[in-house]
Image (cartoon, rainbow, N blue to C red; front, side, top):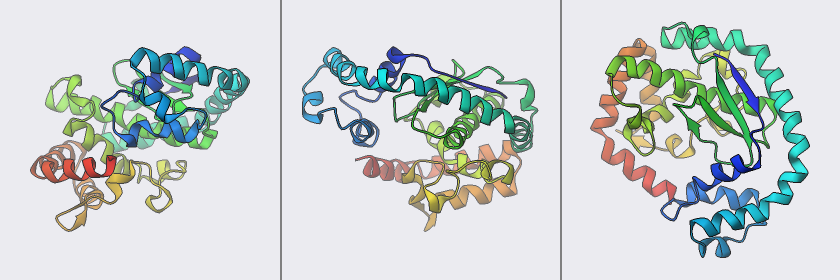
Length: 259
């Protein structure tokens, strides 16, 4: 696997941001924009339709982008340089975790450095977003999270032969893929280069998974136990069976936490 980081331009940032500014989006996803850009008035934004939101956000963020544009080019160089130092180490760890040689797959991954504090990944396009405020260490940590998804669903698809359409939020398969990142990241070859890994220090997954208690136990600990006891195929099967059995409780917790 290999990631190439780039600045895709201002318009890309706007489109990425708008993915999480729809009327039916929860505050968990939409409000981070307001936190990082207090120049945006929440009340004004709420009164706009989709086109109005795009115009308003573009107007507010355009001068900020012009100011940080040179920084984005510097970040691209720093991110690429930092990733290259650990590429072989990363490939070895992922190959062992997924029982597949990853050095010959996903060598065209693109990390788009943008203004969106929420960083989506696009499985079919082999790309994901990285918030520009990250240091090179932080960018690598975020990238490792996203890379888990690419290999996870690659192996998953070979095992279950289902559709990539089923791998997006809010499907249960998406939920499971987000939780298992912590188990995969437990490999010292990955955790040692991921500043977001320790759960106590913020964690490398969404916070509402860290306090999700199922069967009187943190679900992350249950999944990690399954991960330790099984090869990747059996882990996928048993983990999904467990999540299916407790889907109602899992979704109830997420709904409460997302607000």
